[in-house]
Length: 166
Image (cartoon, rainbow, N blue to C red; front, side):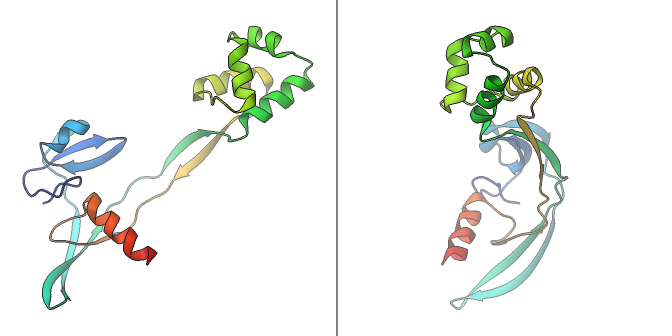
């Protein structure tokens, strides 16, 4: 099989790179955390096709990825915080003391110059009794299609994306 990152043929290891589980060669495994030696079986169906008289193989790879719930902070968090703080009659200085942060941080959040992390948004949301964090369901990849001998690389994905745009 081929490395999902560089396309190199050889023995692969299952590695988590930037939160995504990939089958990569030993060289590319340094970019993430190795989960398991050897690669997991992937359903691959090959059908020969012709490209300018040269024979190439059409590879269809199906991977099922369980949907996950992902939390993200609302885009208008600064406006929501400011509106609720003002409704409660609190000044930025008073509000900052109550949630144990610097006044400058409250100012930067409300002005949109700083977006707090999930924990900070939860803390502020609990204090103000408003919802600042949304949940989203990360989808399921049903089918990945590429041209190549035995799997999809990042280069293949770029090529496919560029073809679709034309």
